[in-house]
Length: 336
Length: 303
Image 1 (cartoon, rainbow over the protein chains, first blue to last red):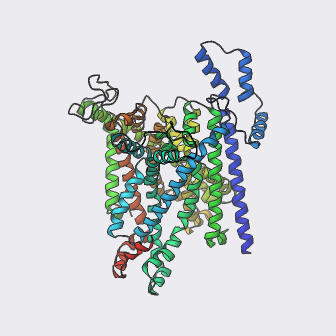
Image 2: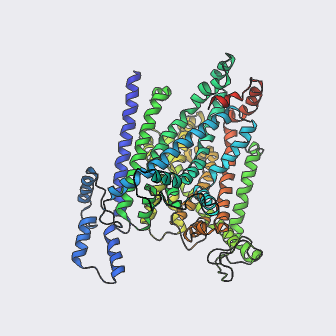
Image 3: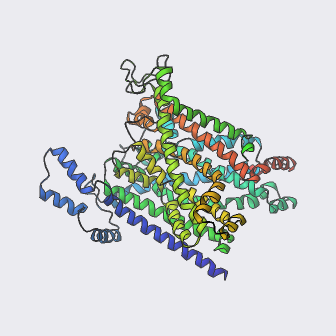
C-alpha cells in the first residue's frame, strides 16, 4: 500500500514536470513568433542601417533560410523546431554569426557552474550553520545581533551590493580586477598563472554572492529551528542528558533542515542560470552574461537557447528536490 | 490582532519607514519644486559629476543633474511601479487562488497546474526575454510584466486558506441554505482573507520596487522617467563605479535597501504574531539556555 502510494506520487510529479517542460519548449517557440520583431527582420534592419540601402531579395531569402521565415505555416515551423531541438541544435547566433548557439553556451557554462556552484554550496553551508545556532539560542545576544544584520543584508538589492563591492575593492583599494573572468594576456589552459588569475577574478564576485545569499538560508533555518526546539522529542533528548551540541545538531537541526534542503536542491537548479546580475556587474564570461549580451544586441536565437537551458535545469532540479523530499519526509508519502 | 501588531517595534519601525517613502512619492515633486527649487532633469553645466557640496547636497551626475533631486523624484517612479505590479499580481493571485481552493475538484486541478507552472519557471530570465521582445517599454508595461510573473506564491497561499475556509461550518451552512457561490466568495471568503491579501500586497509592492530596479539595471526600463532603478542604470552606463562617482549610485540603492529592510521587519513582526512558536520560544529558550550547562560548546562542536 505504502509503496504504491509513493509510486503514484512520483508518477504524478514526473507527469507535471514533463508537462512543464513541454510548456517551456512551446513558450520558447511561440514567444518570438508572437512578439514584434523576429531574427530575420532584425538582421535585415541592421544590414539596411549599416549599408544605407535596401537588402536585395536573394539576401533576404538566404537570411530566412537560416533563421526561419515568419510567414511559414506555424505547425510546420514547430515541427522543424522540434527536429532541431532533438539534435541539440539551438540555432545560429545572429551577433556571432555563424557560430552555433550551442557552442557559445558550451563555452560559457563551466564559468557559471564553477562560480555559482561553489558559492551556492558555501552560502548554504554558512547560512544553515549560523541559522541553527541563532535559532537554538533565540533571544541571545548572538541572535539579537546576527538576525537583524542578515535581515538588512537580504533586503538590499544584490546588484547594488555588487556595485559597492566593486567600487571599494576594485576601484578604491585596487585589490581585485574590475571585470572579466581571467587575465586576457594569459593563454587559456591548465597553467598555474592562469589558475591564479581565474581565482583572483572570481574572488570578489564569489564573495558578493555568498554575502547576499547566506542571509536567506540563515533566516529560514533560524525560524525552523526555533520551532523544532519547542518539540517534545527535543526536550526528551535534553532530559536524557545528551550533550547540548548533540541535541542541537542531531535532534533539532536535523528536522528543521527539511525545508532548507528542498530549497537547496532548487537553488542548485538556479546554478545553470547563474547569478545573472553578478555576471553582468563583473562582466563575468558565464551564461548570465551571454543572455545579457544577447538581450542587448537582440540576438533572438541566443536568447531562446539560453532561456531553454536555464528553464530545463530549473525544472530538473525541482524534480530532484521533490524526489529527495519523498525519501526524507515520510509524511509526504502518507499524504500522497 | 491589529492592536497587538502595533506593539511590536519591528512593525512600527517598518511601517514608519514605508510611510515616509509613500509621502516622499506623493510630495516629492512638490518638495523639489517649492522647498529645494531644483529640477531633477536640469543640467548644471558648471557642476558635472561633482561630489556632495553645499550647492548640490548629494553631488551631481555625469550630466550635471542634482542627485538629491533625482533621488526624491525617483521615489514616485519606483513606488508607482511597485504599487501597480503589486495590484496586478494580487488580483491575479486572488482570481486563481480563491476559486481553486473554494471549488476544488477539476477547477482546482486546472488552476493549481497553472500556479505550479508559474512557480517553477525561472522568473527573472522569463521577464528578461519578454521585456526583450516588447520594445520601447513604459513604466506601465514594466509593472504589468512584473505583476504578470509574480503572482504564483500568493495564489498558492490563498488557495490553501480558501480551502480551509470553504470547509468551515459557517460557509457549509450558507451553502446548504442555497446562497450563490458568487455571494459566498465575495461576502464570506474574501473578507476573511483580507489579512493575507494585504500582507501579500505589501510584499508585492516591495518586490515590485526591487524588480523594477533590477530590470532597469539590466537596461529594461522607461528611459524617459526617473526611478531609483534608472538612476543606478545610468550610473552604471556612465561607468560611475570605475570613475569613483559613488554619490551617484549610493543614494538610490540605499533608498531601495531601506524600503526592503522596512518591509522585512513588518513581515518579521507579522510572522511572530501568526506563528506563536516563534514568539513564545524566545523567553523560554533564553531561560532554558541559561539553565543548560555550557551551551557555548554547541558552537564548538559544529566546526
